[in-house]
Amino acid sequence: MKKRLIVGNWKSYPATLTEAKKIFEKLKNRVGKSQNVQFRLAVPHPYLHPLGGGKKKGKIQLGVQDVSFASGGAHTGEVAASMSDSVGATFSIIGHSERRAQGEGNDIVNKKVLAALASGLDVVLCIGEVTRDPEGAYLGFVRDELESAFQGILPRDLSKIVIAYEPVFAIGKSAAEAMSGEGVQEMVIFIRKLLTEKFNRSRADSMPILYGGSVDESNAKNIYTVGMVDGFLLGRASLDPDTVQRIVKLTA
Ligand code: PGA
Image 1 (cartoon, helix red, strand yellow):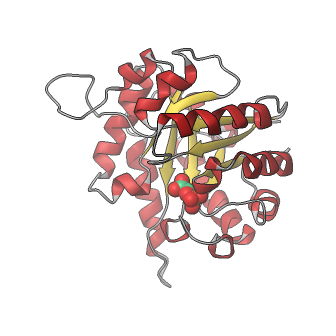
Image 2 (cartoon, rainbow, N blue to C red; image 1 turned 180 degrees about the vertical axis):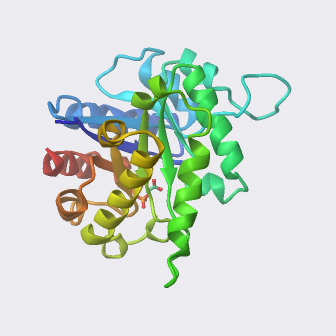
Image 3 (cartoon, rainbow, N blue to C red; image 1 turned 120 degrees about the vertical axis):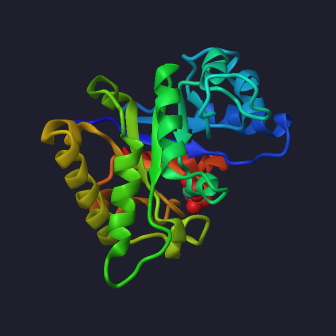
């Protein structure tokens, strides 16, 4: 059985390192020992080293929410994947819709996936339609995101990639506005079909697919069981250790 995976995305929270340390300590106590669910956490860059002590093997594996497309150089404000790797990151989220909304296109997402892999980071690749249309053009949108992100990826790197399906309209809403388990299931089947076409059945089946978008303890069970996902990408909920603990338990 594939190990279940829950990834937390702190986004641009909390406001201070002191607060971050408090939440992280609680998270380690609540979810650090779960046997069959792995919890990984993407934190803001300045918190990475202070929380993880620069190591990769803590109770909770830490990651970042983005990497630069470049491996270094005159790129003011960019953080290269190797830099995050060197202070303890084990993965990066890439292509989150909040970055795509800043103008990050499919070509840049692809460069970032390649840059992260080249530096030894695992990748949580976010894909998902912005809106739905009755004609089903949104399926083509998701297909384009997926196919372009995988350009130039070597088969041996596939085991380092996790897909996070996040319909943009369901992010940051109430739990009732998350996608239904049935809706998630449809998209998981669609994404596995695309992966099978691109690679092969066994590679497609072994790639974890997470759902993200307003998951909390009230909808996690339905989305997990009906949606046929391998876990979740949690935004807001990841800042609340009690909620994370309950979602981990539900998933386990
Ligand atoms: P949310 O965020 O759980 O707060 O909706 C999910 C995400 O943006 O990854």
